[in-house]
Image (cartoon, rainbow, N blue to C red; front, top):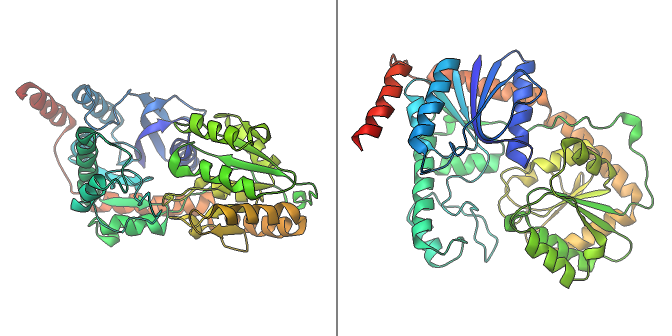
Length: 417
């Protein structure tokens, strides 16, 4: 097939950008022809056509009409069989593309949630409601919104409503976890249109004989975006409960970095923490290889947690909060430890158990690597994506409208306003 992907990030600055790059390589290896329209990114090593339109992915962007015209023109020149939308919030562009093509959407985050975090900040419990009036109540009571300005909140609320409408109109919606699949169905999307496609990892992993005991293991790794929902603050607080020798590597960056750095200083932990910022892919893989335990302290309902299966591919036990889709890949007591959300004392206790017991680390390392190879391989993911894309093409209405008419329609809308 000829597959056009739309995404905000086509750069390794987080889970979505990394995933889209890896998926593109996987699709090309399977002899699909791929083009990518992104807001941030550049051409990679593969043959994919990559076009950059700054800000094209944003909801209510000041230059939205011109961006749509350019995106439609690029789509016209590529003539895809299917459009696969990732992190892209211009739902009007998605609607216009749907008039001529089959469109599938991969839900990587909680785009159906007005606040974007899909959980109650006070209790750390996940949201179980569909988008609607309850979101307004959440804003008024400050339970799930960080945004204080009512005008900004209204914009985010409209964006989530547009996202839900787009999901309901999509021929196929992909979800990486059963948790997110359930949240999508709760928004009114027909269950038969939601395809489960758990993420895969393409990291090289380790040969059978390379899992060895490291009696002096003491290196912890946090990899990802430094934002409140990712829980780095909770990890730092858990380290107060950890005795003995340890060091923490923080591979990532984000809006919460200054605050958690200040917290580490107040807790007198800063001299045992290395903040590397975003690193190259190879540097990140070296961090996995050097780590003894990987911690995923996300307190929001993590849509999946790609870092977890990457760590497991390297034979690293994982300690994580029981949130969102994490329990679908992390088996408590077998490949790591699941801790009740927000219980920082137990996180510290479980990390301490692993650092103190090299035989336990080795047993979990073997189980973790075996589970990744068995459940989260590139071949399994490709099969699920192929199945969903073929289903979307079959379900798409046959529309005879030409791209010239579509572009003209956008121009008419522009002129009439």
